[in-house]
Image (cartoon, rainbow, N blue to C red; front, side, top):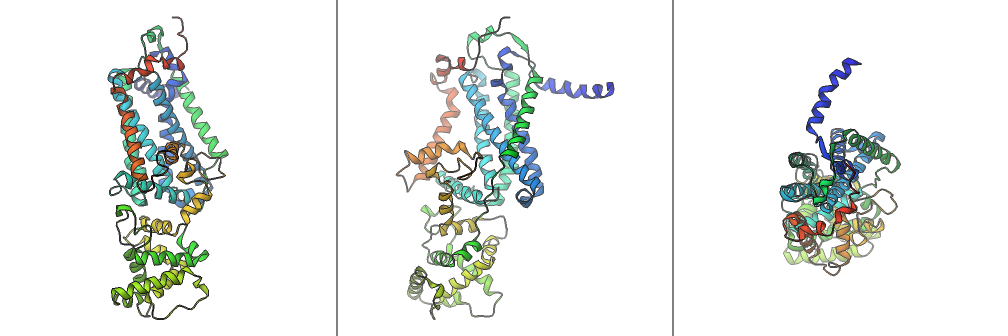
Length: 469
């Protein structure tokens, strides 16, 4: 026993040296534990994230233990965002950003923004329908923001690298820098009345007890409210259920009239030629295994006017019910689309789209083709997940598990100032959100405005009457 106590003493001593030891008495209250609880939640995310990344998607989707860990990771995410947001709120109400502490506020806001980004990228990687729909919505937002050329939310490989490496390392650096400033500058005093509070020893035992309670609560919530999982959409499933829809979509990719082909400004990640990606490459892969004539080559050898006529005939053919009809002879476009529809039913078409640029992690083409069928929007509407329904604030229609409730402001924008802004909604929404975030970052530096919490004595909502010395 004595040996154990002796060996653990250096660890306790090191922890006590790293942590703030002397604080005003109000700093032992729960409101001043939120930064520490944010760090505990982030540590849970790092640990569970490493395990999930090592085990792989199949494990966290199919294995009971993996499903639990996925749920644990989800609730740790909720805790991380909640505690950072509450921590920022307390700092705001108590004017904890005064003087040199302005920079701790800036670091804190950046942590909050990166935490939200980390959460969203995590949802995209989950591997279910929610991931597919979120990736589409996120890509549109990034394109509207003008950063789609560098950040493709439909590229699973890129998102994975950002989620498990870039953002975690960035958050670790911000947390360390933030804590270093707090350690050097101490806890802020919102008003001269703070001097009425005696300086006492920081109650580290109580702080760790609160942290342990958070861990236990996250573990319990992961059992009671597990992370939902709705099977992702696949091209083969849609092709089997509604082959006509797949054929109609293929014709639109062929003639350049699909949503992807006509995307506003044709900006990244949608700058590819839809006919090349969705028709030519998979069809040529298919014909490489067959000895029958290449109908696409014959089509491309036709005069442009005849090609147009054949595509128009294909549109009319698939607008009716072609299942019971005999394919018209001499229309090479219909022959190509029919072959690709059969290919889609077998599952080979989706595989060809994934391998189009040499990596199975690149899902841009698959998700964009799914989007062009219209099925993702229909499914999201039925689950009440669209932005018009304050989408993604919930996991799905009947799930008690909270979703990305922090996206509620986007839903509010879509119901108000952007309600009739159909053409440039993503761009204008990005401008509004970006401006709001810049104002939040600059708040401590704006004269008079930065004194409002102090002038309004909002800090009294947090503080109790001073204890007698």
